[in-house]
Image (cartoon, rainbow, N blue to C red):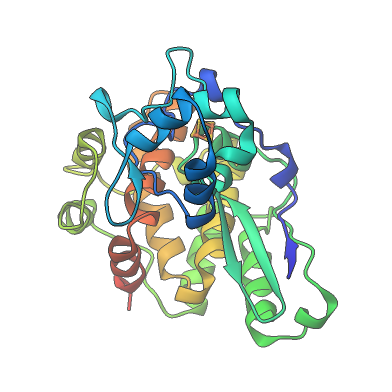
Length: 286
Ligand code: SF4
């Protein structure tokens, strides 16, 4: 199947030991069938260690102290890759932080914001988001409508706030929320990490979103919105609008750009990697 990628895709390379929030910590790592077959076929002490670290009906690595993958070494590198190469790791490890949306004749594959390096690449990209659709898809209503949404979001003659408002108006959604209301809503969702709750606390007592008007953050929010539309357009645009608002509200309290990237990374981990949360956020504006 043909696979297509956004313009920034090739810039991504895992920063491994330099990563502050490694995906080898805190996530359950399932072993796919082919990789399990490979591990079962290997001989030697290290292969024994791999097999002894796998448990469960859906085979997965049993995490060690601090929820670390047992093969993440002290230098932040993967011992399985060091020993056997990256062909020996599970699909989930090999593909992360990539995601794919499958259509009739092709798949779109992007980078997920739950990875700090992917988030940096996506949200600092100066070139407008772009993905080279196959010619047969250009006249499909779904992609035509999505292209119109991208046009609104990428209208750099006006502020991102005005673009978001224009988009909300087109789809008859509101784009004005009480941050207290959003605090209650997001606290009602499934939560994974305590630091995310600390971020949500910032919504309490906060009014509006001041950062949408900041000149230096126009690209950041444009790319953020385009990413959400790209990843979740099948669910409508409610996910993108609500997510941009709540991230804008929390980022209004951030001291610097690094903190903002971190908030976005957490949001992606908490919301986009829980089917239940993604559905509830998508439905909020309906
Ligand atoms: S989160 Fe991203 S940069 Fe960090 S270890 Fe995982 S893939 Fe690499």
